[in-house]
Length: 462
Image 1: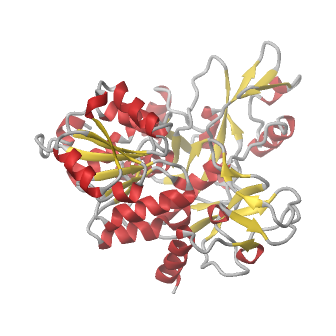
Image 2: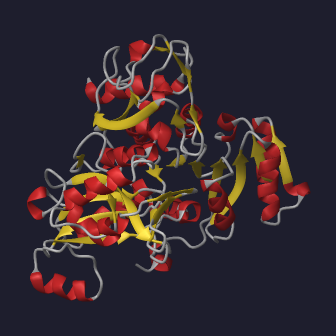
Image 3: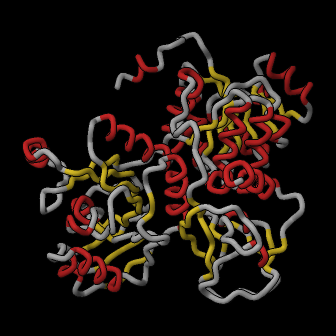
């Protein structure tokens, strides 16, 4: 694909971009987006003004050109003068004359407020915050369409990348068996001292060399690996959240089990493992979605949290040639791995900006539907009165794990979408294994995300 030609629809057009949140994912988007001739970024929104100032200064903007705006009049005047604007009040910023907003706060409630304000002001939205999208993304996309604007997932994060890879495979005429992503953090094996490392934790596994290669029954090896590496844990909440979003955009794919398999697997093993059982894999059927934990030596390339598609090898000549060229093919020769071994976060999201702004197309689907919910299940005893809050880099609520269940209209006794629990308080004690429901919580009256989810339920489940 020649991207110069793809985005050459109007070389003189300058897309005005507003960015909510200037750290993490959005840092690289702001830095590299400021270098793109089709993009202008003169609106930054954040709680800490000095961080926004520092971001502008990092691209050469002088202090005299930066204006901290507290009213619409002040903002409009500064914008007309070509100044660089900073807002603490995000809904106020959404009334400025820009084209597209990137929401990247990661805060479930705040992001819902921000996106709703953008759509009401008829601004295109590129959504990075999966926490709120997993709860009410289909409704936000519908509201955007009703206002004549686009709601898109962000290229550079795995949901949009996986949707793109699936569309690529289909366009190429390939028959898909399963799809998914590699989890963020690799299991790194050191054969010299027989240790395995994940992030900063290293454990000795004396007999791990015997688990490096698959046995004839792949499931047996995977079970032994899980037992040997049980210290680390295999399931990560953000992975489940992201794959649930993909299910809402791709109606043909479903989880094999609600918790996902999360096998610890080498890249070359994925085409065999993530295939139906009749083809030697661990899945109960085709068209499944899951996550793998990448197992590798330190001198091997990581999958870097990338995305994959496992396809059927239904033409021997084609796949014999590709296997010779290094394409991973299962031992049986019946399935193969197509993968994009990275996600480049913010600067890759510029493709979403250009696609939405110049081509009028999202880098996801146009009309997602609520097919699966990321539900919450207690993993330890929890006392009544416990305040629940999504915290940390991956916005995990302490004491709960996630699982993907078919979406339902929420009521007192049905599963609760995981991030609706953010900002609530437990009304009663919970035992491990308890599925969280609405009647277990004290709910803030002003919670916008709850109202959006109730509206989504009426719209799609009436």
